[in-house]
Image 1 (tube, rainbow, N blue to C red):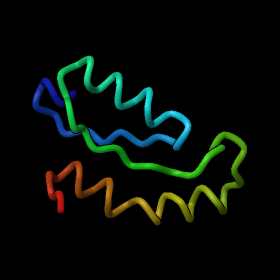
Image 2: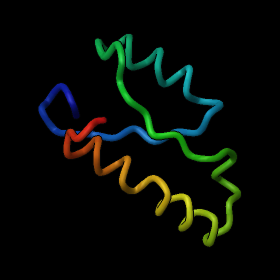
Image 3: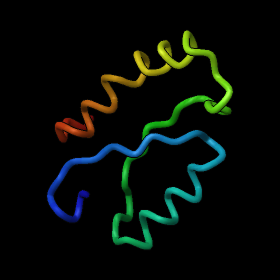
Image 4: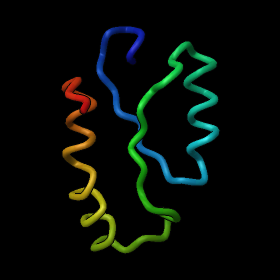
Length: 69
């Protein structure tokens, strides 16, 4: 998406950060930013997922709107 000019935000859990970084480098994004969420997310309750989504919303929007700081 980013290579096509469409902003994107990658959201992943800590155990997958290194693989995500390696994949980004492979595709030419040396210091690509990631939004980290708790692990494991697959078994999280709806209440926990809602809280986590609220926690990372500003960070994700910052990436999509290219507001990094």
